[in-house]
Image (tube, rainbow, N blue to C red; front, top):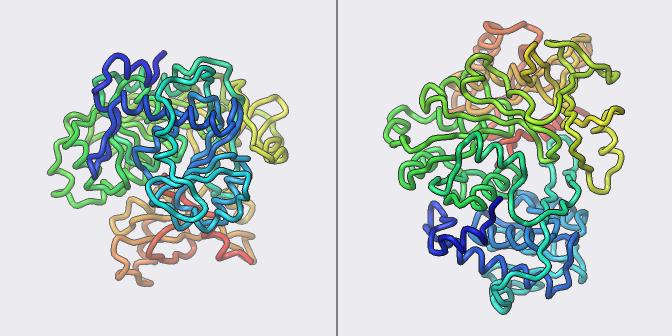
Length: 508
C-alpha cells in the first residue's frame, strides 16, 4: 500500500510529474501540499464523502492536484473529455450531479458556453484565466492550509463512456470503505506485478488523462513513487523522442498509436534510442495481429496487454510470450470466469462466437440509467461490456467486435474488426472503419470508410485495389462491397473509433 503522501515524506524533492513539452514539473511534496490544500477547499465549499466534482481540463500539472484532492476527500470525480462540445459536456456535468466544476485555459470556449446550463448551485472555477461566471482556482486553493484533512476517505472516479454507440454513460462503482492508500487492485497487478514498475521507473503518459486507462495507470505510478512524464498531445515522433530524452521505462499506448508510429518513415523510427523502455502496456481496443507483431519485433517481448473497461467489472491479461503463441488473443481472465453466451444467454463451448460476460462479482451501474444497467447484466449476475468474442480450449479470449457493430448480411453475422485490421496494414491506409449499410437484397452490406496516408491518391482504382486486398486474405462476405474515402476519421483522443457518427450518414 502506498500514496503520494508517503512518497512526499520519503523523498519530498524528487520529481513526481513533468510535462514533456514545457518542462514544467512538480515534486512529490509540492503535489502533496497542493492536493491537501484542494481537499481543504472542497470541504470549505461544503463537500462531504460521496459528493461529486467535475473537471474539464487538457493534460496539465493541475490535473493531478485535483485528482488526489478528490481521491483523499472521498468524492466521486468525473473528468470530462475536453474534445466534447458544450451541449454534451454540459449534459455530463449535470448528469453526474457535480457540485463543483473546474475548467482550464484549454477549455475556456466550451466552459464559457455551458456555464449558464449549470445554474447557481454549481460552484465554477477556472485555472489561470479570468472569465465571467468563474472564480479563479489558484488563489482560492492557496488560501487553505496544506495539512491533510481530518476526515480523509477514499474517493472514486465516475467516468463517462465515450459515447461510441449512443449518449455517454456515467459508470458508477460502489464507494470503497477503505484507506486512501493503494490504487485499484487490478492496476496494482498490471503496473507492479506484471510491468514491474518501481520508484526508479519513469512512466510516459501519451494519451488524454481524462480517460480511465491513462488516468488509472498514471495515478498508480505516482502512488508508488514512479516519475510521470505527461505529453500534452500524442504525436509519433514526439513520443519516441520523449522515451529517449526522459529515459522512459514504462508507457501505455492504444493500438492507433502503434499504427501511427509504424507508419513513420524508417529513418524517423530508427533515430531514437528506446533502450530504456522495459514495458509497454496497451489497452482500449484489440490490436491488429500484424501491427502488434511488428511492434514486438522492434521493441522486444515487453508488450503487455490488458482488456477491460471503465466499468471495472473484469480484466484479462496477456504477456508478449502468451500472445506470440496465440496471436490475436487478449489473454485470460485475471479475476473470475469468462462466459461466452448466445443471444438467448446460454453458455457456448470453446471457439464459438458470442457475447462476452465477466463473472467477477464486481458491481457497477450506469448512473441514472437502470435500463442500460439491466441490459449489461446476465440473469446469473455476470456483466458485459458489449463485446463479442470466443474462448479457446485453454481459456484465452479472442475479441471479434462489439455487438452493436455486428453486420447481418444475408443472414450471416459479419464482425467488422477483422476487415478493419486487414485494411489498416495496407501501405496506403492511415485509418479504416467497417460497418453495415442498408442493402435491398442482403439487409446489410459491408461498407468501408478509409483515411489515406495521402488523400490525393483517392481514386476508383485504389478503391478496387483495396477490395482486392481484402479478398486476397478473407472470405468475400467479410469484404467491403464499396469504399468511401475521408480526409479524417472520428476517433476519440484515446483511440476509440466513433463508428456511430459514420453509420448515421448512411442510414435514414
